[in-house]
Picture 1 (cartoon, rainbow, N blue to C red):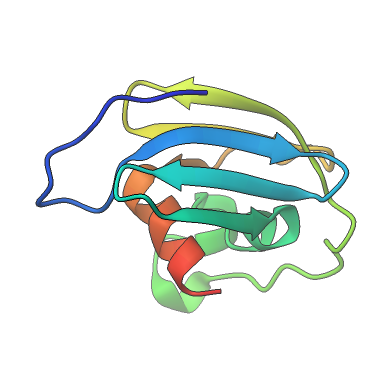
Picture 2 (cartoon, helix red, strand yellow; picture 1 turned 90 degrees about the vertical axis):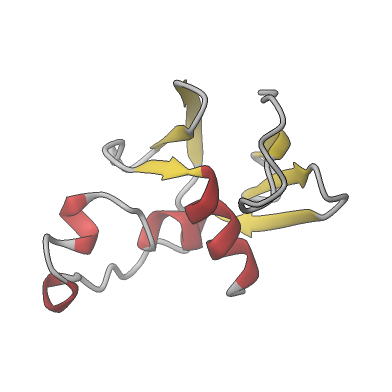
Length: 107
């Protein structure tokens, strides 16, 4: 999946996103030259969906036992996010580019 460049006053823009099923990691290359990887487990337990995050910070759910989860599909959402489809059926999180970058920085 490839994307277009964003203005430089925003979070770095992803140039490519690839998933390695064997490593269970999402690899992202940014327009600032940075390359990161995020585990499928982390992406699943930190899903930005209301199902996981709730509608208020106090409603956030702790998701456990996702060590073996994998990503089965990725779908571009406009030019601002990616929807990740997990093998446990979860698919409601839209990972915006800034949120994806934030997750990568917090590892």
